[in-house]
View 1 (cartoon, rainbow, N blue to C red):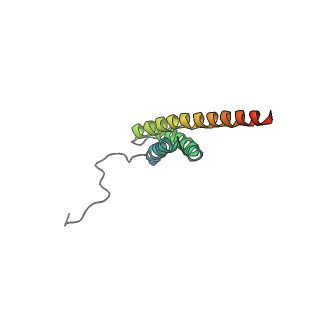
View 2: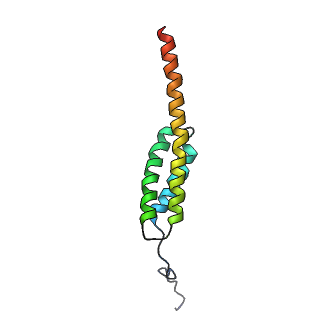
View 3: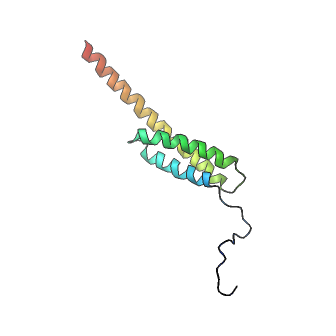
Length: 100
């Protein structure tokens, strides 16, 4: 090949789904931020869930990354919801006690 590198050679493999990669990245970031920054975690998780489903349904490689992103996104919602519910219960009880 005269010393030239063929950048288009992918050995006959299908390209990896970009949605699956994005879902995995968003799921991991949502998981890392779910305990402290729930207002960032929940939108990231919702987008990660959507992209994970699209990545799984696509005919490209990367279904495993799509599934992992979907699982990470779903798991990251649980601590965020727990913190919101607990915080609102604590704030609600403080508001009720101050009225008496």
